Amino acid sequence: MSNGSQKPLIGITLDSEDASDGGYSKFPWYALRENYASVVVKAGGVPVILPQEPSLIGSYLDVIDGLIITGGNFDVDPEMYGDHTTHETVTLKTDRTQFETDITRGALELDMPILGICGGQQLLNVVLGGTLIQHIPDEIAAPLAHEQPNPRDEAGHMVMVEKDTLLYDIVGSTEMNVNSAHHQAVKAVSGSAIINARTSDGVIEGIEAPRQKFCLGVQWHPEFEIDPGDSRIFAAFVDAAR
Image (cartoon, rainbow, N blue to C red; front, side, top):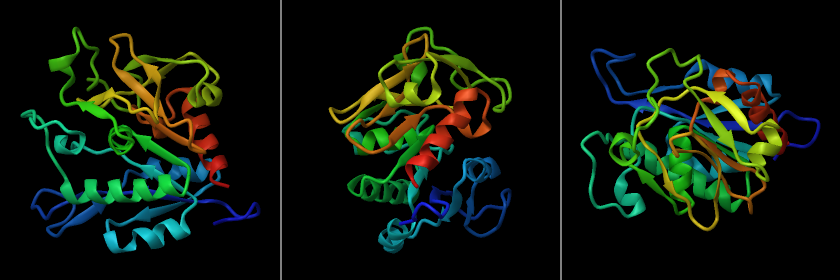
């Protein structure tokens, strides 16, 4: 682990795709949006990308000081949270989800700072023992546009932040303007987690695990730094990893 004179190493999970004629490569490839890395650099950390190699999870955890679980256009297998039906909109990336599940469990055991972003929050909630809404329009009455029509680097809606939470301590506000790119959401949290943010339609937008040093999930993408609180989230996360 790093000492106070070194910048903390922040592990960032990668998206992955199989070989295709229409994508980045005709062979399997990893992907990471640049701002996931640049926002860590801006906050004083060193981004370390984590290829999905299960045999290296222990080695990764020996090296990194904090873990970011990124989002992606796919879903956690409903079987992982005890739901034996699968909505027609659900798409899986089994290897990625297994890798992220295992490294998140390891990070929790080490009490390593964790930040789950969008789908990363959903995975974090499942690892902590919670459940998910498989498709928001089917379970939420009159939902907001959680898959916003405007660009992702603009706000889509507002979230209300709960006082007496880590998130509130970080952002210093009860409201944030955030972007939104998801069709699933946290349904219930386990006894080890609490809800720290919601939207006006009731959808859970943030969770945290109070017994951990720093364990935070947000449903939006703070790496776009749309709201002043977004930069503060990364600053606090990287600071916790020092």
